[in-house]
Image (cartoon, rainbow, N blue to C red; front, top):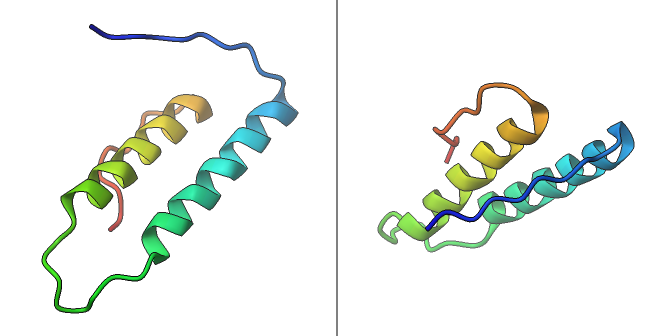
Length: 68
């Protein structure tokens, strides 16, 4: 089952949401990881989801491949 939500945002609100998503993305990217640890698929999935969501909000085609 897919849940969807439609929200009307002003340009200022949209910019604020995108700013928050950029902050979260940076936080996930910069989180401490052991240098020799195996790839973290959960982290990679979160980064892809954030990139997709940002693309939807920006109204552009979302880049599913997040830079990890």
